[in-house]
Length: 501
Image 1: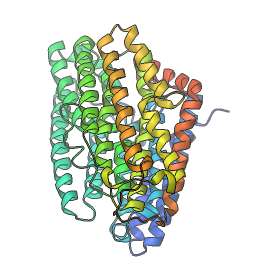
Image 2: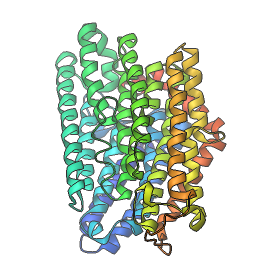
Image 3: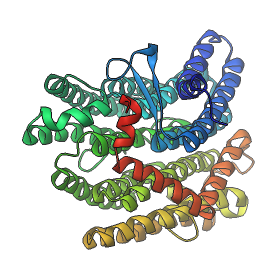
Image 4: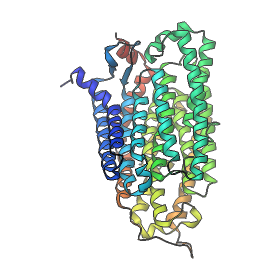
């Protein structure tokens, strides 16, 4: 039975409202860490349930729109859930809930007492708002909410490395925000609107093609900084390895992906006047991002820095789908997004467990985890092999879609780069496997074999199961990704839903 319109609106607002309420409740319980912990897990669980409900609603009803305060677009604040945004909100819910549970036994009480949970909920709210907004200015606002929450999470604890990493992170992101704001000013000055659907209609007639392309480049640079695209990624490996692993995991799973989401949304809906130029630049950047990211990973000896460089490499695959700009390529990018968000979050969480047991992230000082913790070894191996693209795991199907799309578009050089990077990814994952899990424990190094993982283990098992499910249920998930891709390539559905037909 179709849902009434007010029920649909409620479900659309929940992914933003639930973390906002959880953050406020955590602040009210400031004096009690125990209550904050409970609110953290319950709030993240409710957000995950809201994401599931939203995707089910979009699957049944198609694109759902909510006009805040009853003001019609383009005059009011518009929230929109299509296939892509609903998938992204659900993925944010999966990562947020997993990290909230993992943090119970991994984040120290001092950080928990100084605002870890309110900040985590604010970050999830900002991420969900960015996925659901139908307005460019509100996208900017949600980016700033994420920036504030993520910077404080990054610096929470006040260690020197954290502050150094946080300074680079916030400086580059503020430059991106300034470019974003300048682009918004130009867009509004020329078109008189910042509603994305309205821009799709008005932009081609309001701005000469050359100026439109210039504005598009401004947004491309701003979003590329936030997504850590070549050559603007250098802030990421200097910052993501400094905070507690729970924070690194949520950053690796979600923050850069919001930048990629903004690129996907804007360069399929708003900036499509000169696809031959803009998307060729994106495709070239994708290739360089893949190569530099994986080469950086191969050179690392510290587990979290290695995984941080891998984030960059995987961003390249996502951009490859956008650069090719075909239904199959975009479907591959969306499926790849689901695969990589879950796989990367799992690997970061495993690095935290390895540190708990061995007291270090240095591969040269790790070893023997396969014998002492076989379950942890399995939890690492599943996302690692998936990231390398081995069948029947999700990474294989994601790369297969992108490679097929590349061959169909006769982009053979790009296909060769994607396959070569996949081999180097396998090499770097085996480097961690050999160093941390397979070889014997190096002599003379202290061990903490009896270290208790507690609530750290269930989220890793759950995420590894999600990776297996993504691969073993590839057919329906690829079909969902195809629906999302077709919706992106035919913006008339989105425009009609937002502006009315």
